[in-house]
Image (cartoon, rainbow, N blue to C red; front, side):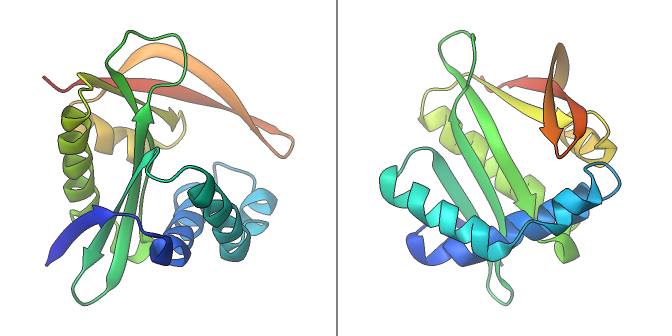
Length: 171
């Protein structure tokens, strides 16, 4: 059975493993392999632990747990970055353990995130997706998110990749 709770400091190692393994699986063939190979759970956990101590409770981090498998997913939500109307939140991250992708955990976790976003009085959510990450784009589109035409570029090593902004009204 799945349940969701706010991330505690004790969850950081599991969340870092989900994030790093999630990146390495989801972005293989998109983000340069040396960049992905250079990511470590230990480095991510060290940075996340430092951030967690500096900013308790902000942004909101939710962890999905399975009674048998432990931590299986992580999502992060906060105010939207950039020039947007008040009441706009942003899904900063959503990662599922790669061996469990496609089992409904992502939908379960993002629905929990939507509920929390509404509680925080966000009426719209935005998120950024790598343009070439077709699986993620299809997933978000199936949940009512639509590309709004905004783009930005991120650099990974020597490679510049385009991201598309998606949005969804909550109310």
